[in-house]
Image (cartoon, rainbow, N blue to C red; front, side):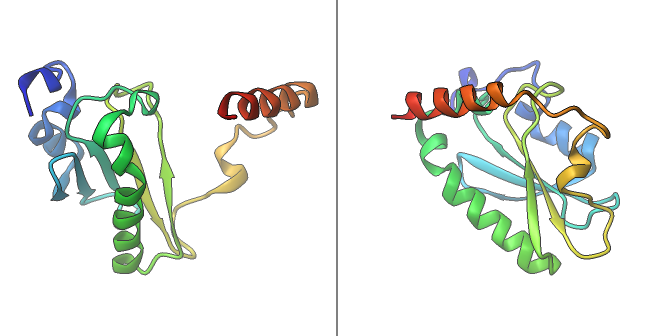
Amino acid sequence: MSPLDRDPDCLLCRPDDADRLFGRTRVWADGRWRLSVVGHGPVVGFAHLEPVRHIPFVTDLDGAEASTFGPVLARVTGVLRAVTGAELVYASVFGERVAHFHVNLAPHRPGDALQGGPAMLVPGAAEAPAAEHRAAVVAVRDRLG
């Protein structure tokens, strides 16, 4: 990987710094992707999957990262699920705080600290207008062919 594939101002392009800041340990890498597991907090096995190369957002995935993302995600979540005894692994992508694509992986077991589903929404959030939902369905279908 060339230095041009990294952003010196990006924390995740400096994985040793990110590992120290987040209290995580890098457990796997394949030259394109790396997985780090956080060693504290309420969720055992909480991990970050991120490309080695600086890719700002999921919409910027291209090349080898784009073609390997699905298999890598399936592999690492399968391992996290197995070693933690989780029923499932939540995969969340947010981008407004750190502009280096990464997936937050949270193994979920009954009775743990995680809440999924409706708890991810602002309580009392209003239903979006049906016309906007229909327009989105049509636009996405049309663009994907």
